[in-house]
Amino acid sequence: MTKEHFRKIYRLFPGKLCELLMSMENAVIYVFYGVLTTLVNYIVHFGLRVIFAPIPDGAGISEIIAAMDNSAVSPTLAAAVSWVAAVLFSFFTNKYFVFENKQKEGTGRELAVFAGGRLMSLLLEMVIMFIFAEKLHFNEFAVKLGAGVIVLIINYFISKLLVFKRER
Image 1 (cartoon, one colour):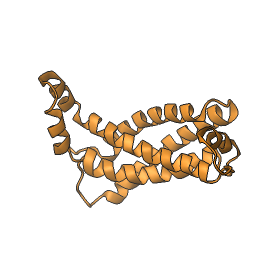
Image 2 (cartoon, rainbow, N blue to C red):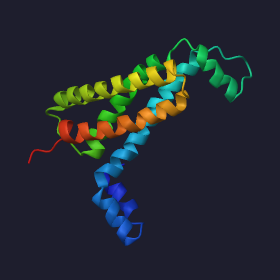
Image 3 (cartoon, rainbow, N blue to C red):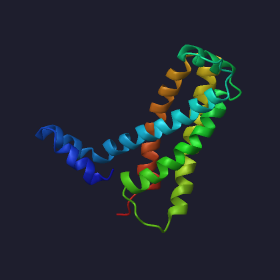
Image 4 (cartoon, rainbow, N blue to C red):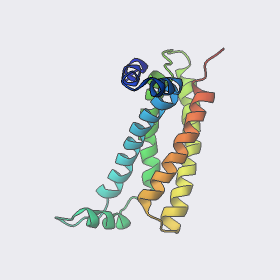
């Protein structure tokens, strides 16, 4: 969805709310694509954990979740693999839809800086998952959600200020 699509949606809201959404347009669109990126990340993360778990035939959701404790793919490894899928999805949605950067020139540099920033946030997520999910045995879903919120905020500012900054 482009900014024009979002503007059509904003116009459905009452005046002040429409104005508020328009004033925060990039952040709103970033959050929208951030949610989609998070879905990509979660689907890959938990998909890997489940695919490589010993799940008995006819297992229900609680048995599947319990079987993830014995998955051949650790939460940390799943976080790393899901990161690659999410970074590729996020780069292109950020470049073309959030920050509307249509230039082909410099895309390699942008991707390198973008991936570097995302690598920092991956390491942060992996540390969070390792400490809270693997060592302290907090609920993996809750830890993944909390880590995702922290990473989303950090990544917005990296993208806005370093990767897709507009020359003035």
